[in-house]
Amino acid sequence: MSQYFRIHPTHPQQRLLNQAATILRQEGLIVYPTDSGYALGCQVGNKAAADRIRHLRGLGTRHEFSLVSRDLSEFSLYARIGNSAFRLLKALTPGAYTFIFKATREVPRRLQDPKRRTIGIRVPDNPITQALLAILGEPLISSTLILPREEMPLTDPEEIRDRIGNQVDLIIDGGYCGFEPTTVVDLVEDVPKIIREGKGDTSPFKIES
Image 1 (cartoon, helix red, strand yellow):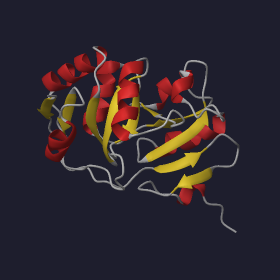
Image 2 (cartoon, one colour; image 1 turned 180 degrees about the horizontal axis):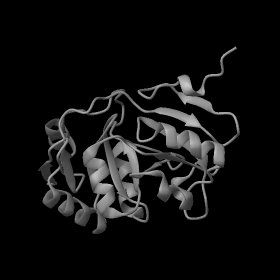
Image 3 (spheres, one colour; image 1 turned 30 degrees about the vertical axis):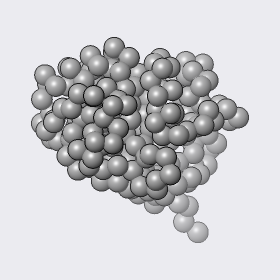
């Protein structure tokens, strides 16, 4: 059975965050809160945990993961971000967006879109996640917690424990954090392309006629 930490949503306890970071560094798979719901997360180099995410969610090998970071400084290592796109991201992060870019060679191919060689990147506006990422000093592989054959993500940490507590190493209970997905924006080309409208405001990407 997984460990279960109740962490304060606005003033997270340092002791529990340190323990969560240790679990991740020991190749653990965690459930953690974001600004658009609960997600599954593990370290970028942790192939076994990424495979566990695929199995738990019923995902195929073609699924493109996202990388979650506390700020934009870490993303230049993993994504090819031009100057105009960087300015846009700086204005909109942290927030409920996932941005798609061409991946660099630092991103394992198993995490990329197999045809386009792209990767999603995201900076969530959640104090628990921000503090945990600051301790880790590196991004996490992330995937929304939606189980196979279900349309909506799990939102109640206690239900998450009941349903998948034996399939993850840690569940972080950060209270209710919603269920609306991120807005996904493809920034591979010069013109932004909205892939999915979600919680993040799409007006910055729409050209007025």
